[in-house]
Length: 190
Ligand SMILES: CC(C)(COP(=O)(O)OP(=O)(O)OC[C@H]1O[C@@H](n2cnc3c(N)ncnc32)[C@H](O)[C@@H]1OP(=O)(O)O)[C@@H](O)C(=O)NCCC(=O)NCCS
Image (cartoon, rainbow, N blue to C red; front, top):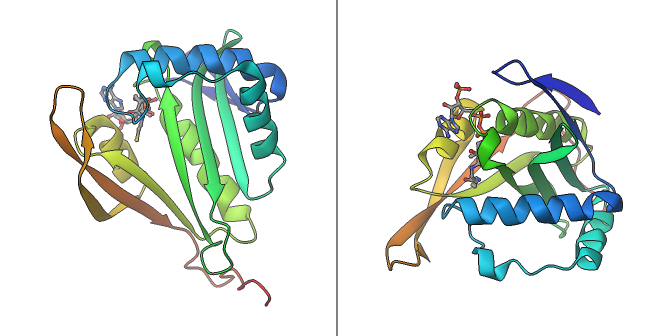
């Protein structure tokens, strides 16, 4: 568990959740999906049960090639990040993540802290060399944060999103390459 200071001076923690956090994460995600149209899931599509959320948490936390993190303040979930590596031998060095922060706690450094924690974990991971993400081209705050952290644009999915009002939006594909170092990670055997 890590303790970090927000820009407004409050302290929040970052940790891996357990199945006991399922209800809190569901409540958090419901609030998030109601607050923004810059993510894929619409509020009415978010119908997960507590049991399914527990299974999701257990699957990710038991997978050495995945990471799930929550940020907490005053026993409330205020941020969520999840990463999973690809599963074929030829692409197991890459993986994609998603990140979000509770609308009441955005722009105080929580998202940055979650991604920095992922990057540190991935650097120490024996296999992960490339982190990827997808972001709507309209999500300017998120894109600025990703660029600040070193992520580079590598492609665009044209008109991949159609908003409820009919507006088409491109998805930006971004990546961070981790492994250009003398101890570059080894290929998988076989
Ligand atoms: C995008 C998101 C994850 C960023 O997390 P965050 O905790 O709000 O961002 P941070 O406070 O760590 O911001 C880091 C930088 O991004 C910029 N930024 C992020 N959100 C901002 C906002 N709402 N207003 C102004 N600047 C913002 C700031 O310039 C900041 O840079 P700085 O540290 O140099 O000042 C968060 O705002 C969020 O969950 N948004 C809704 C869901 C979403 O868009 N998820 C991403 C989908 S790809």
